[in-house]
Image (tube, rainbow, N blue to C red; front, side, top):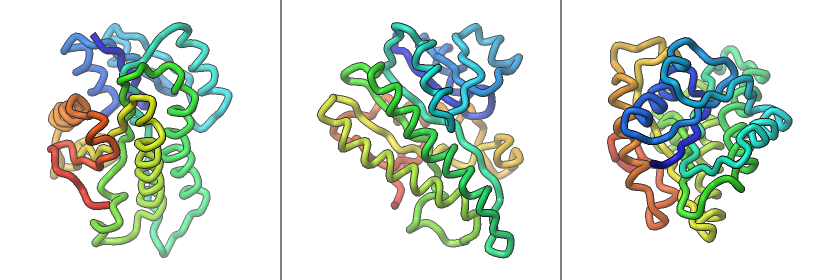
Length: 221
């Protein structure tokens, strides 16, 4: 049984990660700002009131974990806000950088001592952060923050390899969650996470730093 820590675990993909991990017999630690009835019902360990944009809050998470060691850290917490060229909101762009990119890097750095040799780090990025795949523009805050997150993941893959820790940079697909207004064109969180867990299971030091779609496709930077 492996121990996974999942940020942004109170809904959507994060919740589904926890549900499937528990179902297959792994141990999931759910980290979030505010828990939900559904998350509590899983009967797993929940660490709430954690703000990944705060040094003190993440340091407090580290303390609350006590002697817990982690096999897989899944940096899933994220926000998406529409920012167009016609309505550039720089405060919104900064906020998305703080949560989507810097927050994930902060959590990884603080919890690094808890990661086992042979452990794994997952950066939940997006195809919208692919420069080569950007054919529609706009979404400045989200796109830019996800590019930054992917770059952080790539750098971590080099820096952590000597420690025996592999890094996956993953796109979940277009998923029916609140973030996408439950788009009818998307896949369900169940389907997405099933693919994401398969990618994590396949992650090794040989393929560390790869940018994958949940379906296994290697995506362009």
